[in-house]
Image 1 (cartoon, helix red, strand yellow):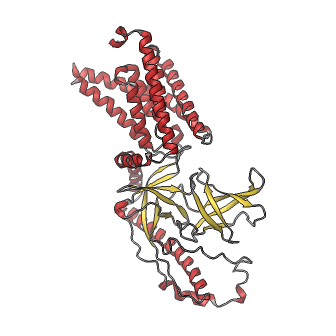
Image 2 (cartoon, one colour):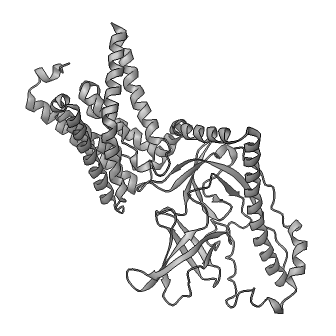
Image 3 (cartoon, rainbow over the protein chains, first blue to last red):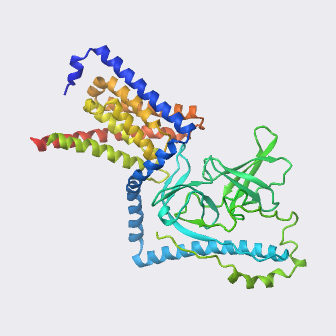
Length: 328
Length: 162
């Protein structure tokens, strides 16, 4: 199985030409990498290619999906597992709805106190299944959902799960979309600290279980255990969704500011189903007023007995708007 | 007939690599995922180098980058370097006994990892975790089996022909 070319071509000439070719290819590759890093024209190419790549992704995901399905089928009776899946889906929806109702209740009370018109939050959510997950040391933290532009998904929609904020849609294809997680290095969420109302930014760190809050003034009142909620600034994420809990507070490298680490509330590495938010009531509205600073409400509850009896009446009025389930 | 069978084996092997490379694995196994595409290309470069010119490596690398959603050109660069080295030392690699060949493949994959690291270091990414270095070991362990499998498939093709 000798190569005829080797016998005829001079040894060194062959070597030189292949080295030249190598250099040419390397230069092209490096140019492409630089173009990819710096420019954004390659995004279009990538978007086009991802339409072709989608069936391959699905094919690659098929064995693990098959294994999962087989496990469920063997573990218990078919009907039981179906019911189980249905119930957990309903639980997920109900929990999110409950959380939303709580937020709306709070807002309602605030508005009533201000004697202004009652406003409901128009919120419609769509259930989506996670079809592919990709976390490598150098990969972007993304998940792929089975919702696409055919189901009405749009770039920029926030994605949540039952416990908190998951991320936002960054790429939409006809039948699937890519979600950038809040833990990705390039992602940042405007948040406020629930206890004090202080506004800051939570950045992803590239590890799933850690968010970073850089550049907090050293004098600021931030303690481990403080809850982070979305502040609604910027209009991308609705206000008052849980984001995470402060885990530790320390000094940053310069010593000028404090930097805190937080644990995300959402089960970024576990959830198989998530909710995509549609049509926010106030996409670009005024920021939510800061919570009053002082002792928590539970401590001074004795001198304002009015709110508890008022609450039971409000839930029917503030049911979330049309809630359609995406087909799985 | 024979050429067609060989074509199927060649392209089918490469397509299977793409699928394996993308297949989701449990997080524990993820660092052990060998660089399948490189292994299969090394095999073909050793056995039938005229089928795997540098240009093909480049194009396959670009394709893998697009599919994997990584920096465009990264795998193209890595595969070109790998391909070049293998083609240079092909005549020696070809007559190595299996264990030496396996070690050579390990060295190639390790070199590939270093190139990967350099590219990302220049791009300004943080250093990877330690398990980053497990993939070449897995690739080395996979090599003899892959080699035997492809040799066997080719032998069968030839036998079916005759």
